[in-house]
Image (cartoon, each protein chain N blue to C red):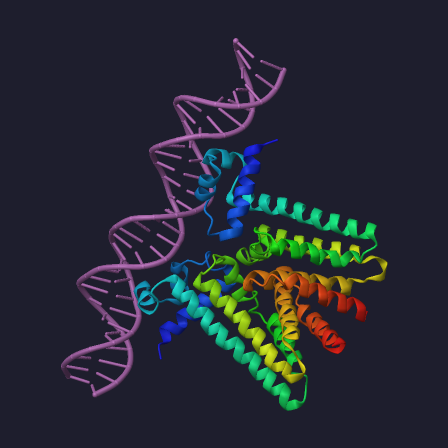
Length: 181
Length: 181
DNA sequence: TCTAAAGTGAACAGATCTGTTCACTTTCTG
DNA sequence: CAGAAAGTGAACAGATCTGTTCACTTTAGA
């Protein structure tokens, strides 16, 4: 393993979250992590590559979290798709909630074709596909798109307004939409 | 009036939209607008003040747009709150759609107490209150919060994934939620 | 037409940004 | 224990950032 590399990713992740991507300088990440600049540039060719590594790690972590929650619900006979909003709720209530890395990355790197923007878009697509799978055969693509919209809506409301009840509200809305179906 | 001031705000608005707040330097705004640096700093004490002026103008513009659409719907006997999603749809389909200024400002200036972050949060609160008013006496605060969540969800989906059908989807969801009520 | 306000252009300050280089030291491994 | 790999620290480059200053020019109104 490469403990420095991981430590850099973790530190960068925290600072990017709290202050944004552009506002967080390389030197700041180095000072916080205690790693030398030469080492950072041995592991990552550029700041962009570091950002992508952070997003990649976050992507894997978050998808795993959702998949495990869905699997657990399926075993317990619960509606699998609704537990996704419970995961959101737990996230919002945690100390480390500073909004969605991917939505923020999308906003800061808005240029069409930008690697960071594309990665973020792909993550959101993957999330929607996970929602689609968790709906099972009784669901359809439109339903998945609706729930994905509730998902992102809840994150933005929770972050921009500090309204941590957004996940519960979105869950209630999801239940109504599923029932109406 | 002050044409230079307005021209600076318009140019800054466009560049902030396309490239983000941190990524857009003062010199860039000056080059695009053809205004001198001394003039910019005579009208705005700092970049932050320019950003706030852009957001203020955008706030007034957008609220007016929504209020006029709601008023028109009320006169025509339509459900007023649903036309809000038609406004969103027209915005997404327009050339100048680069996501929501306020959500993006919120993301880039995430520090608690930051003036830019607070302004963005207030804008979102004002939008929700407009939704609440347009619901009339048959609605309630929870319903307004739900529609505001759909509103922000649609914007984020449209921007991060380039899915311009998000407004129509959100409108359909809004109709179902109103009907279920 | 005269005056005051507004704007220009260019230089400058000082900080900060990403990224490179290199001699030296530490750590790991066979 | 020896050699390779990884990391350090500091200096450096060159670009870019926000913001200031000032002598000069343009514009607008009484």
